[in-house]
Length: 528
Ligand SMILES: NC(=O)C1=CN([C@@H]2O[C@H](COP(=O)(O)OP(=O)(O)OC[C@H]3O[C@@H](n4cnc5c(N)ncnc54)[C@H](O)[C@@H]3O)[C@@H](O)[C@H]2O)C=CC1
Ligand SMILES: O=C(O)C(=O)COP(=O)(O)O
Image (cartoon, rainbow, N blue to C red; front, side, top):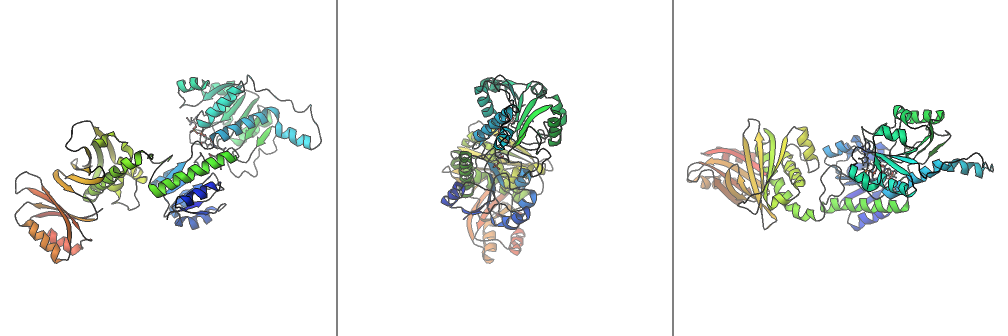
């Protein structure tokens, strides 16, 4: 039974779903990195929010881990390249908390416009400072969105309802989408020059880090008010403090900080500064949404191999999965065959599909070929890390779809390009739409199941050879389960190949005996 650790506070629905789906679950929150490293080895899945930092050292200790599920959106607390290299799927729940977070941004915008927290503190202190708190109206003000994705577009919609004018800086926002949203797409400098309020809704990346730097804050309109419900690190906090002190920025509301938990920021106590402790996603509705989604997605993967909302591997929808699964099994076997036969000299691989196979989503099929191919280098290779490892090794991976009449209703061909420029190709099909079957091996037509322990023999076609190999194996107590043969030329006497499946591994001395039989050119034990 797969086992999941929930390491951040999560709605109880998550644990309920895991258990209902046959996944064992432990909820242990608030662990330090060292404590997490000590226990992570026993888990197949790790369900997190923003507090758990899934860094490389944690992943290195996670010897059984298959999936990290983020009950929320931002995954900057997960080392995704390290997870990919370890073959761990990283998934999030991209929509479950977006309305809630957009509402928090709007709440903070109102709070800034009317100085609500300070007015509340003063009133409850019995001061009744009616003349101290003069606010600004939102109607007709310009709201500058930095990032107009899911959350940004909900903020825009709500702001338009408040009769604000919305401008957005987002290099990936198409002009058509901007028109559809009723907003104006602008360059960052123009946004800075025009916005009365700026709200940030981008992920934290190398491009967005310090997007509101000292320089950009200086370009902002005097009296601007800034809201950040996205990530600490998007604003230079020291520069923001200086701009608030000088009055260039009239107010700032931060839900997120460079360092969290933020317990001693220089911003604390600054007039017109409002903060919340990363509450953007904290409503009961959003937390139920993300808990249900993350548990369903992780259970789908751990129990049934379905992949939804993964950030480092192509998705496999519930509709696609049953159709693709036999192809992925075929792809992995063909990759495994060429990998075991030619592991040392492969420079490139081309994956060709024809017939029914050419209609399918090729990404999972390619990943499965690469996983089979590279399993010879490490038995921890899987569909997640295989494309990553292939890239790291400089393997040239190509996909070709053929739209032509073929001998088989569906065919997958894997061709490897070797160091010396030569190519070798294997091909397979599906029998009864579900059973992977080899149909061609390095130019020799041959039908075989690639399954269990096998022996590959290349020999000179000559009478009596099959009898000799049968007796050599029989004398060593190796039972032959199936026997497949083919030859390169149509007539006798050329190169022939044998694929035998055997009931157990063939011991090394027996392999040598087979190798020493007259006419044998090559022998290789294979395992599928
Ligand atoms: N405070 C909180 O509790 C929460 C914070 N978040 C944060 O909000 C962020 C945004 O979430 P979504 O809107 O769902 O993500 P999204 O992926 O739908 O939208 C992000 C937008 O940022 C844009 N973008 C990327 N690089 C950019 C750049 N260099 N300059 C300008 N725009 C750029 C993208 O094109 C995209 O449109 C998340 O990455 C997460 O970090 C999300 C949920 C809750
Ligand atoms: O979903 C996100 O990106 C968030 O930042 C929410 O964070 P949380 O799950 O509340 O720790």
